[in-house]
View 1 (tube, rainbow, N blue to C red):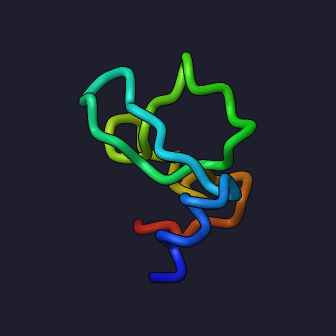
View 2: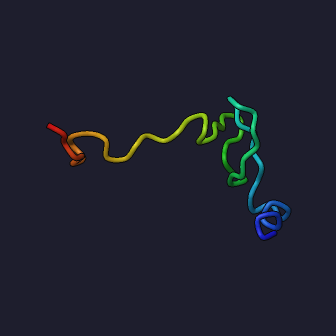
View 3: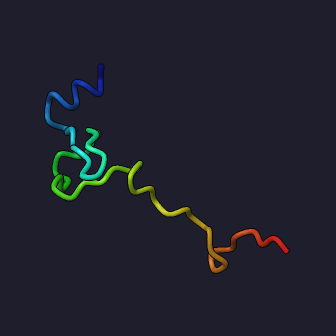
Length: 58
């Protein structure tokens, strides 16, 4: 219910994803025209390269 209150008062907004068309909770001042959800565009894995100290399998 707390999440519904934040959306109703304008502290959070529902934004439509450009790729899948799903609606997601976002900050109301986020640029909604170019929004892509985390399911359609997942973030890069942290620490996957040699420079960041990843575990090396030999």
